[in-house]
Length: 233
Ligand code: SF4
Image 1 (cartoon, helix red, strand yellow):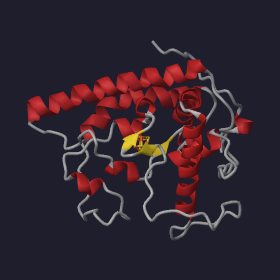
Image 2 (tube, rainbow, N blue to C red):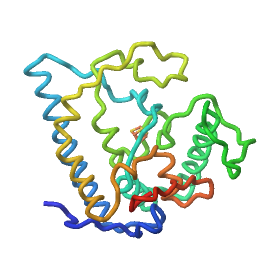
Image 3 (tube, rainbow, N blue to C red):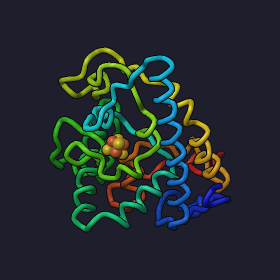
């Protein structure tokens, strides 16, 4: 049973993405995550038993955390709420710096615009992984988004490395798509939850670092453009 029957965001569509959500909504997202994890586990087991396929994903591997991680408003707000509850002041400050560095890196990529409020002199390394990653581990593992929970491959892990990593290889990763399919009914619950609250699910999808900066109310956040015919953006 859903913890929150109807969509319940702490903000109205006129203030998209800014503000705290309540604990009930974090519980709703968590409940969907539990179902997603169980379904992923069942499917990984079935793949092994029935088809002899073993995922090459292993604890300690974080190559896919260098990809652009997309998430939606409900997961982003649940993650921000978790961070505000669980992280110390220093951890939040470190996360803020990593997220700002990610933004600085992101806007220097070809074809990106340069908002004036990003400090152009900000120092950043050539490689940018998800700001939630700390010493090779997800610092919010229990609240990582669905995209992180359902990405399993049976290919060389180096194929998951981001393009800017010198150790990346040309081969594309071979994702275990049946794991995503098995978890989809539970991911859909989050989509329905967002749409029942009057938001556009697809319109709310953005890279996780963008969502982090908005939900944490950091001054370098890049707010999404509103679309004329759309209730969300
Ligand atoms: S949220 Fe966690 S698991 Fe997902 S990309 Fe970021 S560090 Fe990796």
